[in-house]
Image (cartoon, rainbow, N blue to C red):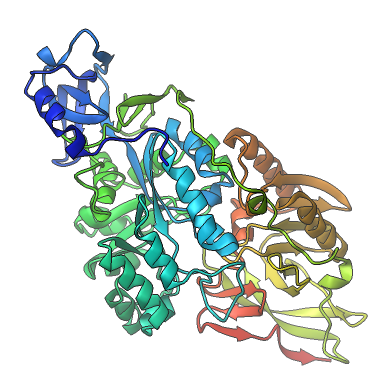
Length: 601
């Protein structure tokens, strides 16, 4: 349901040929620019790009007769003409925005193509939620391709989701216009051990001739990794070190290097190219997860490219990793990813290839942004009421729901504790001796409580455990209905009464993130759509998110992008230790473990 049907190459081939031959004027000509050719990795000065029907007809030193009285001419003298940037792997929901508002936020940063995996909403609303995201994506003035989520739940038997994705769902979605492949296959043990459901999803994707996304989060590069690669995933973004990137490309995968709001995995892996000299064609840049504050204040794929360059990567290679490499990976190299005849006319004008100021953005032959301002409409989907009412607590929560009872007679306990690792997705499996007061286990030092509150079916269930690394001081609690990937509600706090207040507040507003201290609400980000997204402008959501960040800092939490760390504490497919609605999960062994290992009296 695109608002404006974009013509395919066969639809306009004759007109492109006539314009290229100089027989018919172009609709638009960008003149006198420096052609950054990512196909040949060179910069060619004084070239004109001739555009017809939103596609590039030809690129040559002088447009000549291709400029007619109705042709729009854009002067690019002295500026570089580069392809629109592509994000090879990302989740729109992580921006706290709907696809329309996400597009509005990233267009001024030069992102003209996104490959999105809406598995967050799949865990809440199932296939219907995926369809809603897919439909709004197709309404946008830039290219948003959808990967059909593969794993809801991400780890069967270790968590309970609001909805499930089946092989039949995957097969159905493969026939939808705009579905580019299968989203990240997070159940890597399932693939490595030939789980029939996982293999059926992969088979349905491959039969459709589409790309299978990967997610291998284990540091073990032995037999399980080899088995996973044999199962069909074609890329992976979970690498965190040079050895990870090298292992993936040697096995025929694309290594996706991510720089998100909280994941800084480019610098530690890019040395595979800059120092080890591996062929850069199999490396792709992506964001994975970027919240609205990052998008508004720091950028999107332009930020990733700048960062890669600052890590020592040649600017032209960095651009290849954010354009043609990505398009080739998804089988779209004849459609986008380079400034070449027949491709969609997605063009950025910039005065410098290193600092990469995004001055003019053209998508599908239309100027969509100029000097940081969006010039086009980003239409919204009509989200139904049930998509805005997904937080079901069952009953009002009280401090007693967050009590952790000690074994009878114990004065202290030896507890398993989730340890947050700054700027990385993995956690640490820690242990701590914690005190017991009046029969209840208390946090101590930097160890505070974490709870997973069931919010899909209104069971009233609360799973309690401990987490370290946030540094909260005083009587504090933060709650979020963004709780990858099952998206129940995560509450982290030093005080059980504050935890109850925060959880109940999100029940009132239909989802989001809030922070309480001493009975006072310090911050609230309302995310009413599936408890994950807002359809308000990114600037408004970013402002609310910034208030949240500052409130967390005021409460003692100085972690970089601490909210992202909070939201991933239930992600039971990334080691080492996580919480789910069923208890504590040791992701190294994919087994449930007890909260207390031993008790001493």
